[in-house]
Image 1: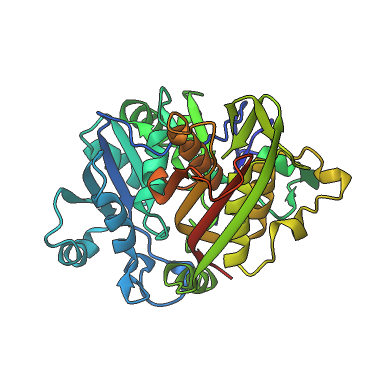
Image 2: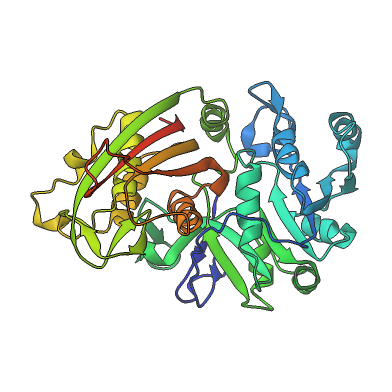
Amino acid sequence: MMDYLILEKKLVLKYMVVSKQVMGGCTLQTKANIEISAIILAGGIGERMKTGEKKQFLRLNNKVLLLYSLEAFQNIESIKEIIIVSQIDDFKRIEELTTGIKNVRIIEGGKRRQDSSLNGVRASKYRYVAIHDAARPNINCSFIKYLISNIDNYDCIVPGIKPDDTVRYIKNEIKTLDRSNVILVQTPQIFSRELILKALYLNENQDITDDMEAFLMISNNYNIVKGNVRNKKITNIEDFEVMSRYVNNDDIRIGFGFDSHNFREGKGIYLGGILIPCSFETIAHSDGDTLLHSVIDAILGACAMGDIGEIFPDNQDWTLNMKSSDMMKKVLDKIDIDIVNIDTVIILLKPKLSNYKMEIKSNLAELLEINEDKISIKAKTPEGKYDENKIEVYSQVLLNCFK
C-alpha cells in the first residue's frame, strides 16, 4: 500500500503532514564525496500475498525479489555498504543469495517496519542512509543516482508521485482532497544518518508508516522529488503480476522524429527548452523548439500514437505560442515508457551550438527524467546541402513501452 503525503494541512494522524512542496527536477550526476549506507528492509512475512512464501524470496521472472534491489545499489560509487535487515530465520538464505557480493551485511530486524529501520540505521557507518523496501524491486542505478543528485543541502530526500485517482478522507466525515496537494510516497528515502537515527529513537512508541514520517517530527529540511510510477510496492498477488510485466517487458520500440523551421529576424531560438541568443527566431505557431518537436515526434512514433501535429495542431488557438516543454510533459503524462537512449542531429549554419550543447542535454534529461548519458546531441552545418535560413532536427529513440 502506498503512503500518502498531504502537502497542505494536518488532516489525520496516519497521514504525514508538511508545510511546503518541493517536486524537484533532476540533475542526474551523483554528488562527489557523498558516502551512503544502503539499508534494504527485507523482514516482512508477506501475509497479504497468501503465497506461502515471504515476498522478498518470491521469484519475479526467475530472479529472487530481494536481488533486484541489491543489484541496483551495489554498482553505485556513493553506496559504501549494503545492510539487509531481515529475520534471523532468513539469514542463511540471504547469505547464500549474496555470496560473492562485497560490502553486504545482514542484521536482525524488529517486530515493526520502523524497528527494522532503526536497527539498520544503528548498524550503518556513513553520513547518509538510503532506506528501501525490498518489496519495491523495480528500481535501478539511474533512479538511485537521481535521488542522490538532489541531496544538495537537504537532510531528507524522498521520491513521490501524484495520484491519478480522486483521493477522499473518510474518517468522521467525507472530504475530497485536492490532488495537487497530495503525493504517494516511495522508497528509497535518503536521510542524514544522525537526524533519522534521532527521529526513529524519539518515535519508538509511535506507529509510523515510513521513515519520513518520523523525520518530519524533528525537521523540515527535506526535498520531495519526482518518483517513478513503476516503483510500486508489491503488497498482494495483483501487484506481483503487474510488476512481472514491468520488470520483464520486452516491448522494445524504435521511433524516428523530424522537424524543421524557417528563420526570421528575432532575439533567439529555443532548443531543448533552452533559449539560444542570436539575431533571428523560428517561424512557428508554438515556441518553435525544433529539437523538442523532433524528440516528441520520435516518442510518439515509437508508441504508434501518430505525430505531433495531430496532438498539437498548428491551427488552434490553444496551441498558439505554446511551450514545447509543456507539449513534452503532456505527451509523457499519456504514456508509460522507459527510454533507453535518444540520438539527435541538429542541422543549422548558425548560431554555433558548441557552448550550449551540455545545457541543452541537461535540460532535455530533466524534461524526460532520464540520465544525461542516455542522450546524444550532435550539431552539423548544412554545408550547402540545405537551406541556410532554416533549422532541421532528426531524432531517434529506443524505448520500452509498457501497456
